[in-house]
Length: 89
Image 1: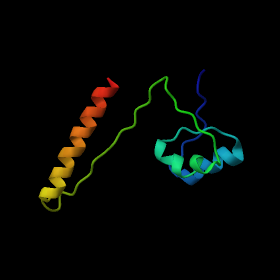
Image 2: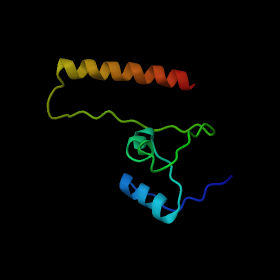
Image 3: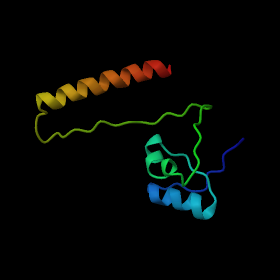
Image 4: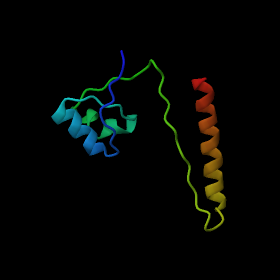
């Protein structure tokens, strides 16, 4: 089934308003479930085919050196992301 992409918005509130008031469908990340679907306002379904990926960015400052704690957190985040990408392959 081909998609008919009608609009792109960044606001979660706008997504929910378009679904609720205009009868459109929306593709959102799982974090959106706590905002609408989990409260019973909307139905949700997991898209399994095609598999969708979502880019993630780790941003740090260049204004000062990172603390040891920050470097350790980054190391763990990278290891977790690498293990997730291996699972997805």
